[in-house]
Amino acid sequence: MTVSTLASFEYLERLPGTTFRKLYLQPSTALAVFRRMLPHLAKSFVMALLYMTKPLLLSDLDLWVQPKSQREREKCLSLLTRLHIVSITAPTKDSPQTISLTVNFGASLRMALTGGGEHQSFGVPLNSFDIDNIDEAFLDDLAKHQWEKILHYVVNSVGQHQKDASESPAETKQQEMLSYLSSFGLIYLPPKSSIFYPTRLATTLTSEASALRSVSDGFDAACRINGVKGFIIIETNYRVYAYTNSPLQIAVLALFTKFNSRYPNMVAGKITRESVAKAISHGITSDQIISYLSTHAHPQLVKSAALKGGPVLPPTVVDQIRLWQIESERMKATSGFLFRDFETQKEYESCAHYADEIGVLVWRNESKRMFFVTRHEQLRDFIKSRKNN
Image (cartoon, rainbow, N blue to C red; front, side, top):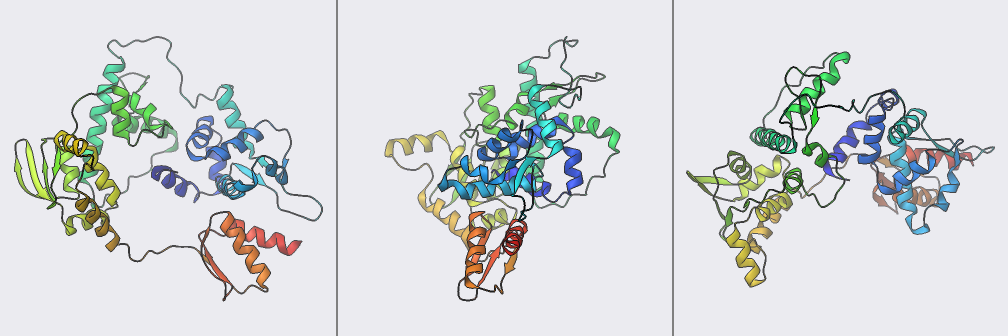
């Protein structure tokens, strides 16, 4: 799960069930969650349940999963439950547990996949073009320039507190969203027109291709931009020379570099402990800094590394950047729940083993019969089912 997907998931799981039911009334929402939020095994479960007329026995899922993948099975069920995609009945003595898709999600996903209904949540396709000069090249150029503006704004806003935007009335939310998407370069909204054109950047952002390491890389690959991108030279004494006059690239470098000279087509500076610590405090990792420097290394550095068969960046610089990050991570806090005071050793071991299987176990102490988990919902149901049986 990517960082952006993880952040979206953390936001969604805080929503109440009634909000999920409203969200899943739209086929486009159900399809987006299915495509972007679920791992492959969870998608297989959803597709298998999609056209079932009655609930499936939860025990029958074991037939679909190899014994060595039971942990992945539990993680997928936990994810599907927290996103209100599936409903699992509580175990009783008279009837076993069953699993089924929630009504709204199942109906909307079927409609999205088959194209049925008149919901128009994906928009209405345009049959005829009433505006000239709207081609792929125009849309690509528009998207690139808009996205560079957004990136430049974000880079220069690091560490600054912004005011929250007020919520708009419910009936105008879709129109305002189109305006926001246009500002991001995801669509083109012609003036005084009721139609819009999705750009190639929108396709890139929704692509599942793992080879696209970032939006910029994916967009450049899609547009077949062949310009030379390398412009950074870094020495073993941590000095950085960037041969560029791009305000965006200079702003990015300034996040982790202390500049001391600037010329019309070059900036010079140094990577220091303080500059790296400042970047880390803003959420930038050492791997991201190293990746950026490697990606934008000057062609001379790349050529020299290829001839010598060594790395592009000096190893001493790479190691030191990582060490500076480790200095700020000597202690890590994890929020969660502590389970203790188990009646028997067997009960403790069973619960701790189940917590480990579903991937929520962080720490355990055998002698004191206690363990710490990040989530408790499934574990709580497991303990209740043990007591009922």
